[in-house]
Length: 100
Image (cartoon, rainbow, N blue to C red; front, side, top):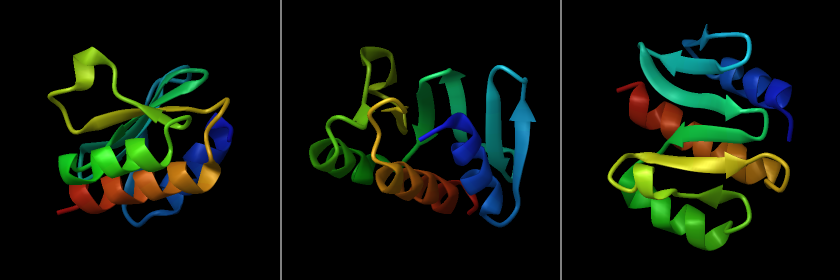
């Protein structure tokens, strides 16, 4: 999956707006982060804590949680090995959580 594909998917969700910079774009709904490109290969995606472990268990090559994110509603997605459907599912979970 590429950063451009991430952006197209994120912006296809209702009320999502692109912010951030050219090198670190981010997509928000209601001014709340949904997903951000942290570096050319890594996304940060907001996800409900209740869903995070199941994502990590089901897609261990796609998602990870570095120590600095353990207390937060976030996962990293590694684009070079990510399953596109899993990334889209996580972004949809983030959108659903953040749009309320």
